Length: 633
Image (cartoon, rainbow, N blue to C red):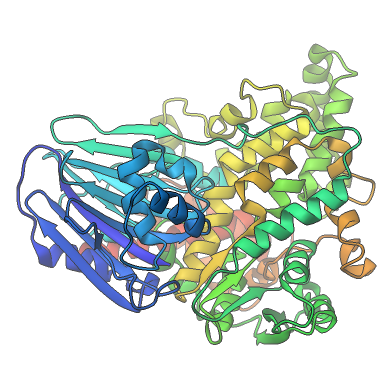
């Protein structure tokens, strides 16, 4: 895995300061501590930091064709590079290295803009064709690897793996994007293609960007999760088919010239990956878990059982639940306000794994592929109720009941009648927006200042999810929810979390469940294959019964998180009290500071659990602190 950065003059051939591209490249040295390289010519500068994984000696970047006409900088791994290499060699291409990177150079010459469609892997790359004077950027189908860009008024295209590289260019405007602030408090992250900065965009997953001098940039989609949808056969042995498909996805991700292992939480997904990684009589798999002293958040007993069953070399790191050393680092790691608190344990398990391996497989994507989140079952059940009730009655009667019903956030999700009544009063898309929101619209209405809300001019953060949920395709209710998550929550939250947490520790993570062919097959399955009375991922659990203990497959789902509510009533309560006096927040004008103070007091005294909105305020305040430090540097 690597970090990339670049500058391209879209209007002429101005030379760039090589010290600038050097600083932009070094800003992501954590993504590639094993080496660095720069290519510079009039109108172009490319920088690369390398984490050596395949062809340790020959994979140096920037890499160029023998004639020097095509240059590439690449972040990622191409799992099918050997097959592509054989095809290209049959067409007359001559390879000089054993690196997967070289496939991009020859592949561009043969396939041009269709190149990304042929790749199986995780990637973000920039390719310069000096003959055609074309810069071509591309990002993998699910957005496992990040790529940010900005087009400056004077005609420079600035791009890089992380926002911190772009901000080193003095021409990149650091003004915040107000609608992205609203998005953050709606979801806990900023959905693609926005970033928190008005001038900086994210290249969406499964997209390429083409830049040529004298022309506007062109974005192009090359894949969609709906492309491979099919109608499953009734006689299909779904369990056996799943095992074989997932096994292929796992095995294809084991290519590496450096030590490799797996992150093992003890959940179904990561346990299935470890089971299918293990070869009878083969070398033991390196597995890694973290343990919490607070047993309500600890899953190591299950992880230990899987590791023992498969003879893994298992490492467990005990994490002090009251160790807050990582908190000040989070804004620097993520570059944006980021509200997924599971970033903390994810960072710790990545740090532990990196002591022994450079590459690790994970179970990421299993919940989206096979409907593992609890909200999917709630959504399907609510849709069945909606189908039996006239829409006008639902909106009026159930909406009135929701207004009258008391808040009961301490109860389990199925017993929160106010939440359920509110969702049932809405149409399916709006109800699902509420399900995936970190803070519902009415709570954001309390937390965000009136002046800020007026400045948004009626902007609706829900449209980011609603647009994908309502995609024009023949999908059932469950598939619509899954697809909405694939297009928003998966790249914006889950994959952002694991990429930054892993790369901050110079660790590459690979996710077999996010193999495009496997994922499309899973998405095609009917509701009956995914949901059962025991919860989601029904077909995966049934398929893995010969491989994993019953108590691992059918235990209640447990989140990978930290005791946030207790922190805010205990060791961090003074920090929470201080939020309402934060000068950064006051001067920003985004929040109703009196309401922030009321929420803090209510939470600390145990009157109401406001840990989620307070954590988002904390994360946003910390980001503003980073913004101020960068402005002063």
